[in-house]
View 1 (tube, rainbow, N blue to C red):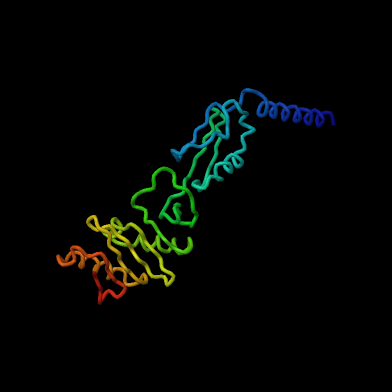
View 2: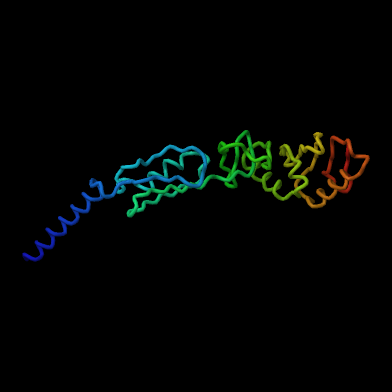
Length: 213
């Protein structure tokens, strides 16, 4: 009986000592904090000198995931060095919609820094249509993607592309997103014809009977 009491008392003392060391002692404190994965300015939610045991990884991660451009945050503590690492996974923009970026999940967010010139600018009724339009853009050949300025989605589902061709604006009525490889070939062939050097309008909705103006 005495041995059991002694063991119980010893266990309580060990647990109390461990709790003190982790929660109150200066032995386990934050020595440094690193935020990696983004160059954007983010506030420090963990301070040097703070007790490591009081740094709750999930709670800290949640404070960063409130930023709309952050998809995910992971927080780790190194009990040997005292370093806290906050790994940020930013959202990857696939298009610009309503003056905001959207990712592949349809999440709208303010882009960090200057948006890439390669991102399509999409005009659509809703973000779902914008996501479909972004997939359509990705399927286009590079000579069309690199020239595209705005991709418009009509209420009928038809596409209208505004492209910069040799410094002039050309409107391309693509129509419904079908026969896309054929339309791309017709687009390239029409631009290659000398008599079309100054065209400003192209209708590819019926690729076997295109119209230019």
